[in-house]
Image 1 (cartoon, rainbow, N blue to C red):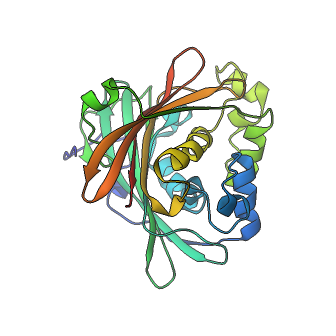
Image 2 (cartoon, rainbow, N blue to C red; image 1 turned 30 degrees about the vertical axis):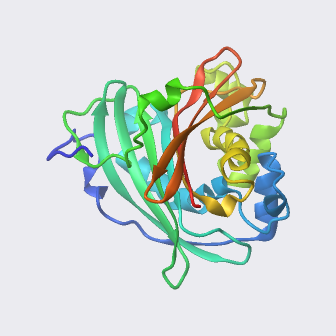
Length: 291
């Protein structure tokens, strides 16, 4: 973890360590089905809405995480912000009918070689306090600078480099539908124009509409559950990744999975996802699976 005593006055470090206001989210089966359909998740318990797809955990939490991110970032560089990393810790499945209470706080601000990262931690609980999901969301501001770090980064993802140098234990590919980004926007509630409006995407300097990072992760996660959890998503305890490149709906993603051994009684796997030309789009992927 990185710590420090001061940051650029442009970044709002006052939110570091301070919880924001909680928000309630009622889980509807139809919303779970919609999310599964948007991400082509055909696992029966997800497709039927019996359980939430793992990535759905971001839906209630982003309603409290994103406002804090926006408050921490100065206006001058806000449009340069990209979703850099995501780290989920799953404590129990999300099921239809649940009332979820989510809250978040600013975890830290940190200078990095590419700019500045802002990390927010969110947690989702039941009304009686049972922890459902913890997650760390990191945004990178590529045009920003700050003299020192305040607070902390997201959790480490330690994997021996020799693991990824070995042959993968599994490789699988996924493709997207022409309307994937529109379906995902509806299911997730993330209507950022670069994912649904070609003109807006090109105006932002992109080649066209790009996938949401969490949508790309959701497509990869479907295969990860098959290869590492024996199709039982309730065994998934951690899912963490760095988003390293944009993905276009026309591209195919291919994921490699490596066995990283056992830690704290859980099986650990590393993964990496690339597009057609070999460029890595999901980097330093890590999952932890219960026995």
